[in-house]
Image (cartoon, rainbow, N blue to C red; front, side, top):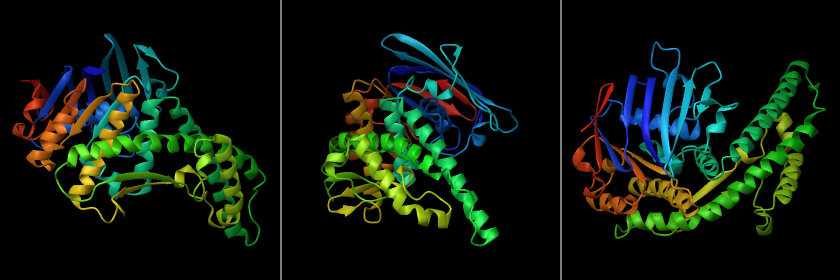
Length: 381
């Protein structure tokens, strides 16, 4: 798979921009602040329906414009597919697949499989658990796009259950000992457990599948650099460890989740929020015998985050998916030895798109197509 073309209209800093990419290495070169990351952000949006930099769509639309449009031509097995996205803050986004409208924007997921590493990904190891959950869910959907529906269903149920608990909490504050109507809470418990168990089982299986690739990727990036070795990622639930035999058993996880909801109910009613479920789970990352968060150096944290993304890329490839690999401003953070190791690791990718401020930062083995990015313009050189 590779991206043949990208066209932007009123996206971020671009009023209009068109880039004709090629298979193999592609480098976007230009000073900081001219819009290189905006280009790869548009690709990430097509692949995941979200930005890796901001939580809402509003900043994606150029100041003064009503909407942004992203068109992406993707080639897989010699067949080209055009994906179009219209991003309109405050309204439902619209999408077209092969020039035909889709009923739901998430129906385009899977058209572009992409793994992006950027400086923001340091939050995978140093940030809140939500960052790691998002990483898992994005990878789940890249593997099997149907999990976009599972995650959407869970989020919808969670929102409704939280609204019910919040309403009861506020009613109790106003009316003293009297609480709101919680008669439907049992029904929402059932739906939350059903959808949550499917999501948790998929995440647990993904962590087990990803582990060996993470170890290989970290060794490839850091071999010979010294420091701790041995990586581990472990999925932990908000209500304690599951028995090993239940790790992939959706009915068993569902039953455990329903039991945990029953146990936590009084506390949830008191606080007005759902305290149990996959939205509260964590992915514990370790290096050697210590957790990465709080113990790893900046270099180790950076290498670990990069290894997570390379592991995701290798897992997808091993399962028959050839994703596009994007490395956004990566080489400036690496010494010459690690640059060369990374380049050797990714040079066989069907397409790897690199952004950099200094052309010399890109290793010789990744010197393919070159694009000069200036303010509002992209030109092949």
